[in-house]
Length: 559
RNA sequence: GUCCUCAUAGUUCAAUGGAUAGAACACCAGCCUUCUAAGCUGGAUAUGUAGGUUCGAUUCCUACUGAGGACACCA
Image 1 (tube, rainbow, N blue to C red):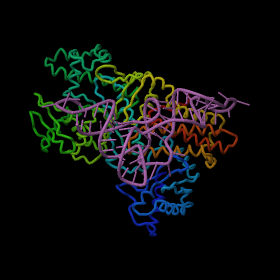
Image 2 (cartoon, helix red, strand yellow; image 1 turned 180 degrees about the horizontal axis):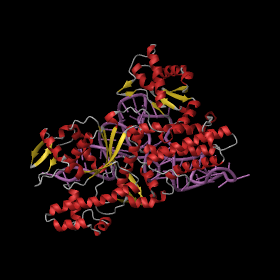
Image 3 (cartoon, helix red, strand yellow; image 1 turned 90 degrees about the horizontal axis):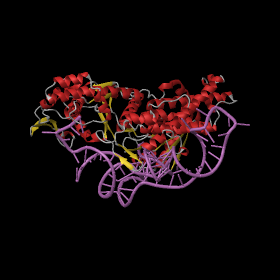
Image 4 (cartoon, chains in turn green, orange; image 1 turned 120 degrees about the vertical axis):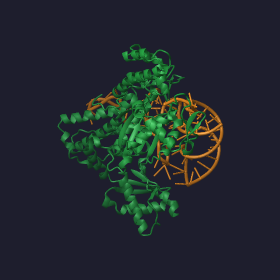
């Protein structure tokens, strides 16, 4: 749609250049077309608008309105031939507002009906080869306990982004990185707690888990003399058990299916990838010794300073940096050209390190790291800090049990990742009945109800060859235009990752539908009109359902 | 002290540099003989402060104020 319009404007500009009306200039700048097509907020400003004349004003040293007028005239010359743009309007200071033929808009319904679940898929995606392969790593919570409220953002965002990118034509793998290396501090600490010699990570949940100590753990305690080794092994064992719970919760309760569960211990340490990376870095002169530790010369690659790679302790344990580099090198080796990581705000300081280390590896693909800002809690005026270790831990489980998954997902996905999300637990519970998710779901249920009635009245077959020109009232045309935004949105989100725009879109779409419902009766005496309107609500249902599917929110048949 | 993010209506949040800054909740006034009133229609209220860039700034830049986070041989 947007592309069609862009092409028409570009063609007009080329014609103007050829005939000497405009000087010659490139239509593409920095890899992007200079002709931008927007959807105006106000409908009196057209179906689409372009600021091209304002942009050209400087290049051509001409008044923007004059330029817009010239382009507009050329577009109108092709009006009948293309059958897309019906009219243009030039508005101060130089906007080119575009009005489409109703027929062109109406006929788009047929495409939606034809594509069904596939509606919204971007056809003929521009990305090919390695760059089309995306590894999306998210959640990756330490296997030391349950998921808390902060994890929800990461989890839902990643899940939805994966679906959007898939629709946009990428091949996406969702990966969960299991931080279970025996050499790591958190596994040792977990192990220490597990054998009853520490209190870190201890809470009701873990205590419950430890009560039913597995026989393996008992054997381990009995047979392992070396304390250090005992902690490592016990931690690893316990992490495995906790992970089983976690996995089940993620798949069953959060309804998120990861493609790959990547075990740090098994995939990186056992397969000696950490060791190999260490050697490679040393061989390539990226490492130097200082104060008994090994340092990585990462400061020269964009990080703010050099970092410790291997500690000065007796056993020379690596810091997180070494396995992380090995991990990312492995992602690259697996053929992914686009790496996306979703991290919590507490890892924000490592973004530079990670990017710098990939520079060392001469990675020529893309690494995007999304940071989810903190979730804080309040009850009334009191702020509560979320902490994994101590204090009040509110788990995702308890929230979902209380509010329901649809509501929770919708609520989380309504907010940009960059905002500091403040949850009022009381309000959330209250909102479970006032949540906009019900507004959206209600629209879907309503459509189903009408379609069901049409089926009973044997009117359903009319959808097949609808007389779409009957859809001429404002509320009908507005609804169709809203449906047509969906693929545009998928395309935009695949570039800016702003998943929450999709959630807001469902509200807007439901809004347009409810308005239409109020204005127009679907099943009536006029058979042609009934058929056309049935086609319209069928297309609305498809679009709404596809969007809700992406969000992971159910589209109920009735409410 | 340095770095990252944020500051919009009473509240929770929107707005690829665009035109009259949008929703929801709460509040007020209307609308069910008709496909689901979990709906529709109407109403009041907001861009932290001071500069700058631009035809045009909530958006970009600088300073300030305030909030959260990160600054380890933890991950």
